[in-house]
Image 1 (cartoon, one colour):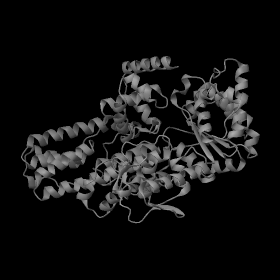
Image 2: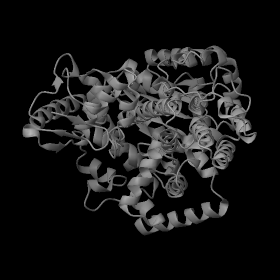
Image 3: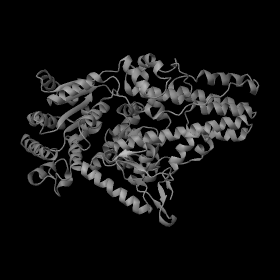
Image 4: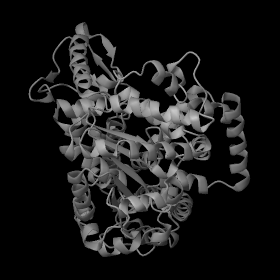
Length: 611
């Protein structure tokens, strides 16, 4: 038996017949291969995040049974922690083993992305995990090919080395190291003009992507080539490192002891919480880690708003109530409650009711929602509502009603405690601020303001990333990013990917106020067509809808799938939204006013036709 999850996911079944692996079977195998082992609850939570605990565990049992039947033998050891059977032949395990053994030719020979073509929009944590491992495996192969290029150059196999260097630039179009290899090899082969042209292209790429000059190492090499010095006098090349997985999601939640303490106090007193902070400050991670620490899998629920929600009344809670229904399918509303909920969930009735148009209708609708939530959420202990700044006014009014209706039941533990999350700069429009401040003053709710990390927290965060060169630059990183965790992660990614980082913080990086230029680097790496998809997404300011993009841009399904894959690989999108809100804002800011107006008009035309 063989299992392949690089490229298309498939395996050889009984009698050696090739069989395709369904996406969750493939994801389960990939997760166990790369994480070594996992508990049943962990796997069930990753693969079926919106299912109840018993449903998710049953799904896991069924998928393991079907996998065994499809492959004709056991491939997962069914012990306390699940792990792959010893010696299972799988391509990604062979890649990792070759990387550990420093078998560079073997590593570079592997092709295909991890679970290529498969998406997991319905499993956000799994999707994020997959993105990180895809990038990590690409870094492995880039590093292996780079070492082969150096080896071939040393052995005098210049044509082979040049071909490898060209492959490096295809693999990583913004790698300064790839450009340096090409400059050296063109020159060593006697093509000084091509070497100088590559130097010019590198300089343009660096200025366009980062607003910075190439590193000293690159400039020294360019100077040597310009002066036609002998090959033996060219500066020696250097290979950059593979970026640790811990960079994208540092294992340590640094510097949040104060906020965590406030949340602990609120949890003990059964007070609703309002977590506030600027974009990128780490609000979502703080509240989800708190939820995971306090209640078990399936006992907390994450709801959220989207930027486009303000365009239509009750948009936010159309999504939220739908999420509750999917999470608790047994809580199907009946009778009057069902008819009232059809105002925002039309599929509940053949002839759904319209949105409330009078105070009386709104009162009836609100009462039905309260009745539904009281039943549907009885087994949920914690309810998180993220990105509250985007909530439409009608949903805000309903949210205020929920807090008032269930205040005593929350205090008594008969209704899930609510954590609301929103941005500092935009919370005025999203919530009835004055009313909220009164509730805080009277002790009814807990305010949790999140500030930027201090110097010590930045130091701890950098230490947790696993690269010993990072902690010593904590002060410079603090000054450059202002202690914003997202900007710290983006800056470290840039430093490690530039391959010019020698342990000293570079002076040519933009100041902290322009850190988002690093995000612009991702956008500039996209094809024109992929960027257009992201722009439509940003202008619409709502959950991704392929039909909308197809009609606005006039593209086919096959074209879309290729463009979407570019956006995923460049970490522009994650699940059904941007990788981070700031990414969407940078996309929007990159549009000229005429182009933005044109796309807005197309979107509004689409919305009118499908309303």
